[in-house]
Amino acid sequence: MTNTELCLNEISFRVGYENVDHFTKLFLRHVGYSPSEYRRQFKYSMLHPQPPGEHECDAIAQAMPA
Image (cartoon, rainbow, N blue to C red; front, top):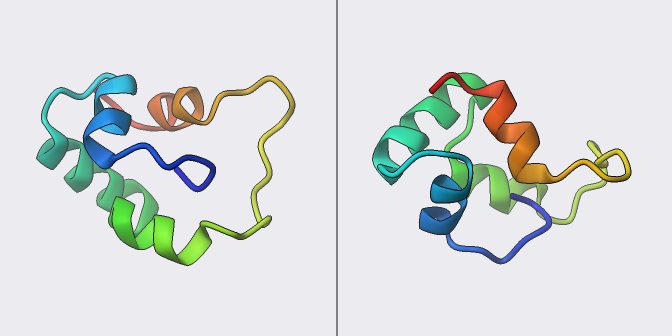
């Protein structure tokens, strides 16, 4: 989410959630920030670089229950 300009609806869909509100609630519960807050606070941060070859959407989807 920090390395893309995709809208939240598209990110939600790509990680398997058709309902963006449900995705937002789960994201907030698991990460502690809403997706928008997370993007604002960490967009330019290098605190959690992605390992080579790992796609960010895959990492988020694996961390959240369906």
